[in-house]
Image (cartoon, rainbow, N blue to C red; front, side):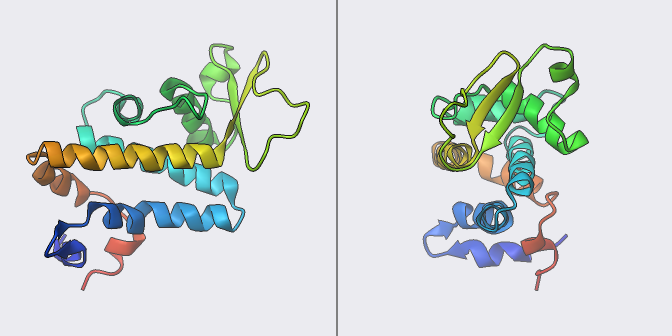
Length: 179
């Protein structure tokens, strides 16, 4: 694949990392969310985390989804752990339901997201279920991406590795709009 797509993200100030991620990932998630396709937005958000984990760590055989979140995301506001989100991801992406094998085995709680204020009377956590705000997770991911972008300023050697791996990523913006 040609790297001509990078021209669009180059300027006198350098490579616009944030705009590339926005065009390929964040904007589609935002469009789905804003059009009330919340489950699809959540699924695409999980895929985004998978992708940035791969971009950062490569195909190492370890759980790069969790590792990337542990490295760059602050989950205090979301009220989840990266491992809990991993199980939720498995449920959503592999079965389009809320029960991964570990949830069914009673090893982790079922996660359910909500949009807007949680109605009164619904606890954030019960014996079997834990709720989280999808918009708060999206904002948490935005902040994590900012920290990730800063890591490229601290370690300039990461850029080549990033670009080599990014050439393997499929996206609407790049794949179908290369000049």
